[in-house]
Image 1 (cartoon, rainbow, N blue to C red):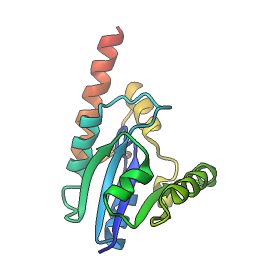
Image 2: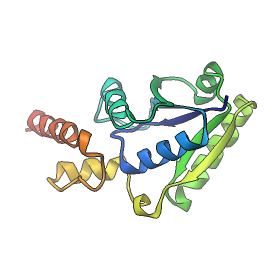
Image 3: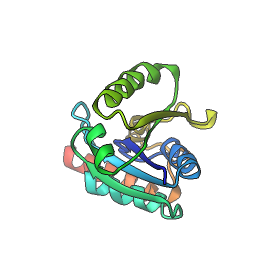
Image 4: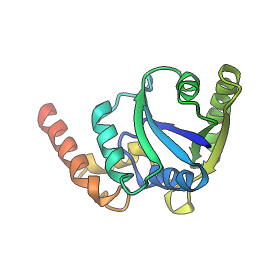
Length: 165
């Protein structure tokens, strides 16, 4: 059985993330989408909220599970017995950083391969940061995130605005 780990911060999950997750689910027997802690980012959503959003948007994918982890991706991959780490690439600018991370993960856990999937052209520009910015400024996020989580994002942004004001 081929098990893949698909890591990210998913703050929030976007159509670009979902594209990579769906395609991974067709390539591998099992896909574990793991919400990772990124010390260089300050998330809008809590880890638990991101897990709930991911579970909602992947509910139709029977071979996908959602988890979280706060340590090294290589260690998590080893503990899950995974063979593959799937990383999504939007543009060439993503590659340099992701390549460095892939080499590091390979050094830490040689039994796992990193596979890069490029997102579809339709979603190349899309990022969680962009979704948050558009939402905060009152723009329409319907083309960026699945309908089943749009209200969650808008409510979170609204609460954030009330706390700041």
